[in-house]
Structure formats: C-alpha cells, structure tokens
Amino acid sequence: MTADQHLINNYHFCPQCKTALVKDSSCLFCPNCHLKIYHNPALAVAVIAFNQQGEVLLNKRKISPHRDYWDTVGGFVNVGETVEQAVEREFLEETQAHCKIVRYWGSAPDVYGPEQSATINLFFEVKITSGQLQASDDAAELAFFSLDRLPKKIAFANTKVFLNLLKNEKGKK
Ligand SMILES: [Zn+2]
Image (cartoon, rainbow, N blue to C red):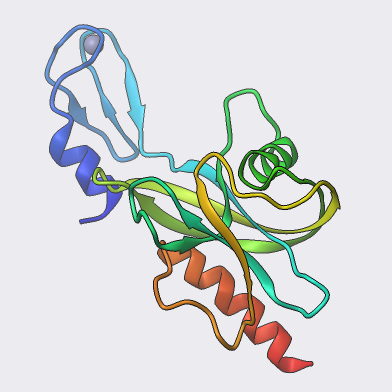
C-alpha cells in the first residue's frame, strides 16, 4: 500500500469538527470547516561521512522501526529548521561530532513506520570537523564499512538507494 492510499483509506473524519472527509485530487477535504489534509511527504536527511580509507559511516538503529538494522545517520527535519541545520543537529545527536556539508548527493522517496508515512530523504555527505565519534540518541553503534562489504541488514529502501549511488560513483574511479 502506498502512503497516499493509506491516508485516503484510513482518515475518515475531520480532526477539527468530525465531519466526514471528502476525497479531492490532491488532498482530503472537510466540507464543513474547510480543513485540507495534504499528502505531502515528511522531509528527512540521510548523512554519511567517509574515513581516510574511503569507508562509509553507518549507524545501527537503537529504536523501531528496523531496530538493530544499519542505517545512515539522520532523521526528520524539525519545523522551523533549515535542512542544513537538521544535518548538523542529527549528526551531532547521533555521533557526538560536529560536521559540515561537503556534498548533496540526491534524494529518494520512501515510507516510514507501521503507518507507512510518506517521506522524502535528502542525501548528504559531510566532513567531520570536531569531536570523537560516539554513538548516542537513536544510534546503538557506529562503524565504518567498505562499500564492497556493506552489512546485509540495511534499514530502509532509501538507505539502499543512497549506498548504491555512493557505490556506483566510487566504482567509476
Ligand atoms: Zn472539519
């Protein structure tokens, strides 16, 4: 089931006035109070850094969904925050290290959690500017992996897309 179908199939009543919602082309619409619920994806950042051996930093997830699977550092962009701030904040939260963005790699749509909520994930490469890497917050463990020997248990479809982008580009050199 796509995220859009999930929203349309499972949201029946207006959260403001409890009137039955009407399906519009781009949203669910309340004919009474005119509330619109759009199908926009949640914005998330996926952040990697390379070590001097060209290995990529991944973190093992401490929380559901996909607990104990390997993932990129990252998370959702907060309301009022820039994407750049989200990259630095998530990296600091999960690794205890400061970073700066060196490259934007691209993006991939995905879904998150049991609700299959739509996300759009922006891929960033960063350089570590200060601090010692130490797993914290949502990260249970941090490790560098060769792109040729990545772990089998990768958390999300978008993580695989990002790792494939990295592999393809590194393979060209
Ligand atoms: Zn309403």
